[in-house]
Length: 148
Image 1 (cartoon, rainbow, N blue to C red):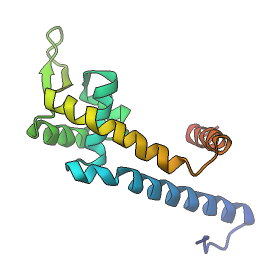
Image 2: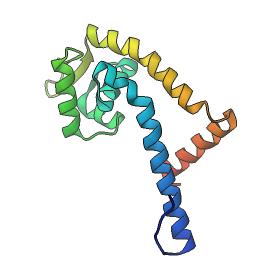
Image 3: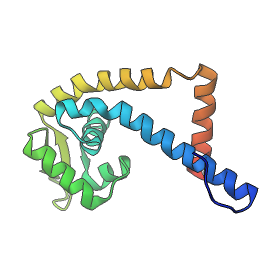
Image 4: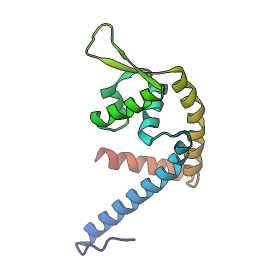
């Protein structure tokens, strides 16, 4: 549905593009992340597990930046993952102010099984675009994301 805003043609086009971009991103994200409910994970929890799986132990601040969440939100996410024994916190021996988050064996097992399934769903969702369209969309998203 296009905007009902009665501004300039340029403003209407910009709003229409933004609406379509937002709706498409939400729809794709919803379809891609639907499988997380099967293992009782939120998108943020999955993001933490995935980041630790690929990047290794990190402090909460770095995890928050990596998955684009606030530090307050990430504390709750990690608390909930800790309760499920999927991650553990460990103080840095050299700098006691730093606390690193590590995957537990159970967390490694879960993300190791889950991530390939996630990739398959992402691949399926994006496969509706040709290779050229995927490259084009990637370039356009990067341009808009960087604001250049």
